[in-house]
Amino acid sequence: MGKRSVIPFGPQHPVLPEPIHIDLVVEDERVIEAIPSIGFIHRGLEGLVDKRDFNQMTYVVERTCGICSFQHGMGYCEAVEHIFGVDIPDRAKFLRTIWAEIGRMHSHLLWLGLLADGFGFENLFYQCWRVREKVLDLQEMTSGGRLIFSVNKVGGVMKDIPADMLKIILTTMDEVEEELKEMKKTFFNDYSVQSRLKGVGVLTKEQINRLGAVGPFARASGVVSDMRTLGYAAYPMLDFEPIISEDGDCYARCYVRMQELFQSIDLIRQAVAKIPAEGDLAVAIKGNPDGEYFMRVEQPRGEAFYYVKANGKPNLQRMRVRTPTFANVPGLCEMLKNTELADVGLLVLTIDPCISCTER
Amino acid sequence: MANITRSPWLLHYDGSSCNGCDIEVLACLTPVYDAERLGVMNTGDPMQADILLVTGGINSQNQDTVKQLYDQMPRPKVVVAVGVCACTGGVFKDCYNILGGADTTIPVDVYVPGCAARPQAIMDGIIKAVGIFQQRSNEYKAQVKEKKKAAKKGAQN
Ligand code: SF4
Image (tube, rainbow over all chains, first blue to last red; front, side, top):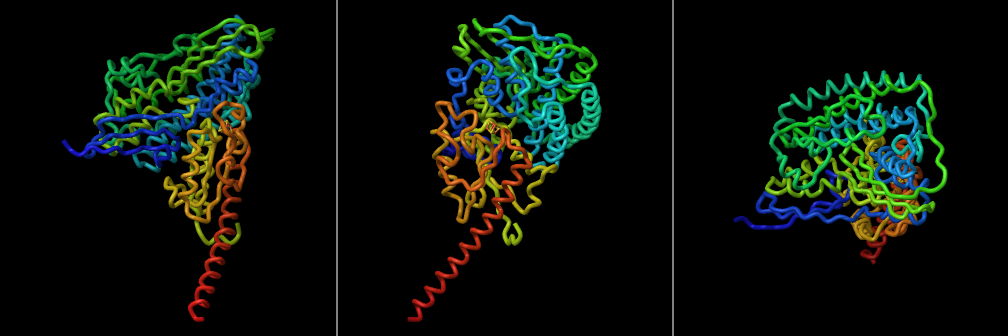
């Protein structure tokens, strides 16, 4: 047995700009155990329900995470809408779907870039982020904000996407698809990428189920779990299949996210084709919510829960968010066991960490 | 900005931000905005950094970390607060775990507002910080010169 020592990882670390602290117990170069400690970003935004009413909370919830900002807002609004028992107009549903998928694309492109940076492929990192800017431009064009664009409200959406903008979205999708095809070649055919990712950090289906992992992280190990199939927003009217892979290694996680990018492009095209040409953007909401509801949405990182409880007052009684990255931390710690120290940075990246939503 | 004689290095620390400002800081360093053409460089090591970019507010858990990072940086140093969270606490100001903006813990030189702060605004903040850094390092050099002179005089007498 070699000598055991503890190496701290984070809170400030070159690989990951976000603060998470993991104590790595290593024996020679092997990691034996990983002990996370969190709380560096805890703000306590759930506690704000006392001070903000249910409409204002939309803006707070959107700031749970700047990357999936739109989807957080959507999940919360759908939960409150269910309490009110209203059905939002079809056009609003489709607009939500389009924005959600655009958000997923920018999140996955961001992750692919960071992954490339993680294994030292600087050029690929820059390529991913260059393409991502095109997607961000779409968000800015349609809503006015690059990342946090509060267009959700309880009862629908606040802004419309006019027909000419829908056309621009489609042409941008074509451009992005071309670029992605080029990038896909590098990700999947380049032998240095393969040797870095294949067989690293394998988790089996049983392990994933036992540890309760969600999202692309779980789908890469063959677990079919995609909350979009539950049918919120306009997803029931669109045609798609969850993307899964059986291998459960870093390469599979990369594959799943890459394929999901193409899936999002496809979903956006379907949504643009099917969106009703006219219609209201929102329904009027009267009074205060009374009741409770559990909402689940599929974010770029996986399944997010929203629990909302109200008692007929403007302020909610309780709002609880369980975010996908939080669910993936146990999986990460399991994965870190028995790996090389040099792989730790990469493995932490493959769960697509977003510490700000982990700790809220 | 005119007479830059050194290339300052950037250190980015995420206080308790929502990630929005963080990825905008990262976007600043990638091809479309490319802050590196201003002569700055991103680093992960506080001991080699000259400019600290802080995003997000301060809470009791990360207060010490921010202070430590600031103390580890060599002088002269400049701090840029990116986003309203780092300036004042922003939307999270009333949260039970937020003490306030970055200036509750370390002295801040440049404030970049916005939620999320746009890359253009962040670039502007970086340019300002580079100017301040240059000014400070000139002052510092003058001080060192003065001290050396005084020491020489002392030795002669
Ligand atoms: S200023 Fe806005 S975008 Fe930036 S960290 Fe704060 S909430 Fe997030």
